Image (cartoon, rainbow, N blue to C red; front, side, top):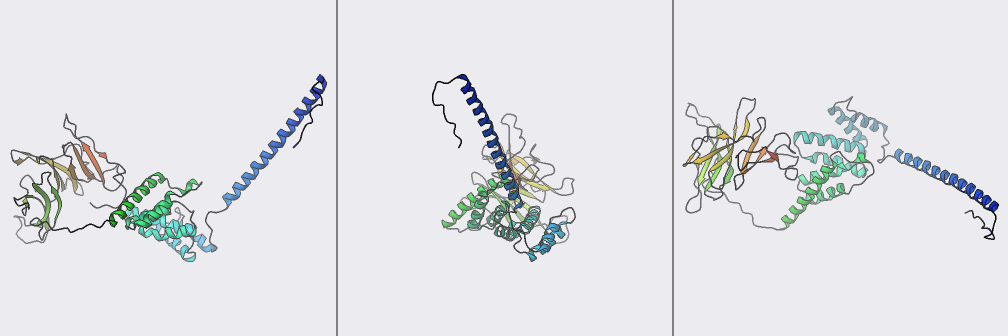
Length: 397
């Protein structure tokens, strides 16, 4: 460092003070330029270092130039259609099996198809595994879909392993996280929670000995069961031969019949009989529920209503003087162009939960609810039960 020698005496004239002040000013100015020069040099060196870092690829580029060209063609969506792109990517991987970017791109292409066709993600798993093996820091999503695919296959230990690796993935490059990253984080945590819970449950071996429900179960198909709150009524659907009285020939065609069975004194249920008028006026009725007093019934009817395809909606009927009233649609809750079915009414009769594939959901078929105003008795606008209940995925309806 540069030191200034202090004056030998505290008694000095104005002139020496001015001289010293000039020296200090000159020194401060020189030091300012010196510090600024050091800062500029450091800043430029950092820019140069950052540029060098940007030039360094995350994943090692393959040596085979033909594989690189095939990869470029496999990612050119403007010039080539999907079947051609997949072919190019596969050829690139045949030349360079450790080509991380080609493996991940192939995996992503398969994921898109799986989502469109409601297929499990296992077909994409080998490509994502190859991608992270060749380049662990390539992207966060391979870990997510690998974990998801293991979860779908009930391979819980592997699912937890890769989902945790997804959650712990860190990088300063924002492009290594999908636009749905926050949702994927939530999904991963939920899958981990359920996978661990399932693993614990499997450790607790309990007797499982399901038995056929006698009388109700026959050689025909019986499904969509419902037991009333007081356990006196059992509602279900049974398939039966379609022997209509206006048909003069035999047929192996079957129809669905909405059935009722009553509890006997010995605790069993009788074989059941078709629900009388006004029920069973259509070929597809069922999936019923009753209020706690057994006087208000909600269920699904599947029928043609002028459109190109049949539609499912929720209907109701009330029990008055031991007779069911005319069946009507539940007002305000059915979407005219969507599938609405499997209603379940709350104990107080003021909330209906149901399944629907209407727009605004998280998956193909979501669970919704509607509440009835206690004063006007009008059913409110259906509300989706949210992402904790409804998730994207495979469904059956």
